[in-house]
Structure formats: C-alpha cells, structure tokens
Length: 338
Ligand code: NCD
Image (cartoon, rainbow, N blue to C red):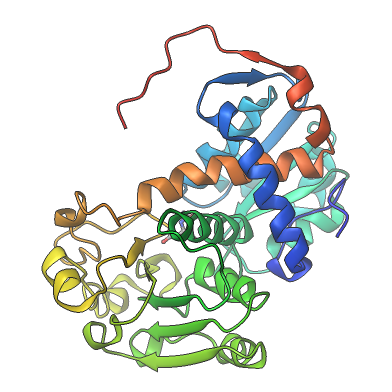
C-alpha cells in the first residue's frame, strides 16, 4: 500500500509486505526510542491526539512517538472537554481539527467512528481504537513483539506460530485486529479461550480458517496452554457491557499465575497482554507473581508500541528517508535501570 498521506484505520488495509516494511522502519527507530539519538525530522509538525475513551499507553505512546520525531502534540481527552458534548458532529469536528494538525490519532467508543471522522478529515487519521471493532496499531506492536520474542529464542519465522488468546474475545478490539493480521501469515494455530458468551466473533473465526489456519475454541484455560508459543491474555471489556454486574460474571474466570504457568506451559511460552491488566483481586488475570518470569513480555510489548507508532508516523508523513539526516546524539544521561 501507499503509506504517504494515508489513513490507518484497519488491518484490512495491509498486505504482508506492508507489515515487513513497518517492522523494518520500527527497527530503524530503536536508537531514538532508546534515547541514544535525537531526530528533528518532524520539527514544526502537529499531532492532534484525540482520545474520547480512557487510555494510558496508546495515548501517551502515540504522543511520545511524535515527540521523539521532533513534532508537537495537542491533546483532547474525553467528550466533556470537547464541543462534541455540545452536539457537534464527527464531520464538523474532523473538518475543524484537521485544519489545526498535520496528522490525527483518534480513539472513540463507537465502532466505525474513526473511519467516519477520517472521511471528513483533511489530514491522515490513525485509528487508536474504535469501540470493539479494531485497534490496528496495537495488533502491529503485538506482532512486532511476537517476532522479537521468538527471534530471541532463535526462531526467525512467524509462519507456523502457535498462539492462545484468552478472555473477552467478543469485545476485545486488540484480538480482533490481531486475528486479521495473522491471516497474512501461514500455518498459524490459534487457540481461542473464552466463556461461550464472550467468544471470538464468528466472521473472524471463519477468516482465520479461510487463511488455512487451525482454530481451536475452548472455555477452559489450563489444558489449552500446552504446546503454544504465545499466551495472549486480555481484560474483560467492562465498558462494553450493559452493566457492571454482567461484566462481574466473567471477571476472574481466567487467571494465569506462575504455578499454572509452570504446570501447563512450555518453558519458553511468551506471556503477552495489551494492558491494562486488571489487577483487582476479583480479576487478577495475570498475577504479579509472574513479574519475575523472563517470558513475561508485557512491558517490552508496551515499549515496542513507541517504535511501531514512530514508524507509522514516519511512513504516513513520508519522512522515513530523512529521519537519520536530521539526527544527532543525545547530550543528557540516558542509562536506564530496566
Ligand atoms: C486495549 C484497548 O484499549 O483496546 N488497551 C490498549 O490499547 N493497550 C485493551 C484494554 O483496554 O483492555
């Protein structure tokens, strides 16, 4: 696909070679994200970072990614601080705000809303999550992490991957986008573990099968954990339920801790989660006793988000070849403890 000037709304836009290109550019960003080098390639550019749903990682990492390329970030958070609360349409908001920015990232609770906004925007729009529909940048950083973690184990091929996705697969937009992304690869084995009421939407299961992948569905976690490379846990998406009591019925249904990991997983199984993990006692989907497990990749996954988002900005704003030309070494103390 042509990245320059394009919206990034769905994984469906990509072919496999696009993914390889994004990952190559993300690798190029490592010295900047690790604060060894500074680039000013987006000096003067403005990102409109519009988040109409709670967010920590996605919002801050998109903002940091833009800053690390030398650009400035203007942020809108929540409907209450926006004229949408006065009845302004997405169309009008897009027409106005795209006049103030060079690129926009948007998160919104309604499926399809970011595409609707993008249709009226005069600048590229990146989908930061639209309801239960998609979260394309998360799926990209998830797959980038999977590739890196497996490379670390000496495996250089994503084809033949064995992955389990656990939890709220009905409303979890990260797993929806990840399933679409896996369809670009070959011979993937996907184990979907959820309560039957929160199963992966059938159209996505069919897509995986049409891509030639093996799909197993179960509502029991432990026995499904053997023979997998990646264990991808998710949070019950309580904000998508009619009421909290309904979400409470499922919270805590699947809890992974070190004892279960030792008993059921292969020694190298990588543990992932888009975060936030729900650490309240009634949920505790990934126990804190996994924090010292070297295969717990959740924080490396969050770090990788900056690289992938820098890559997307550089590609959409067409500055990939200029990044290194506008760079210098940092001049402050940058050693990190982790
Ligand atoms: C996810 C999201 O918002 O879809 N988080 C994220 O972006 N890293 C998952 C979640 O909130 O559970």
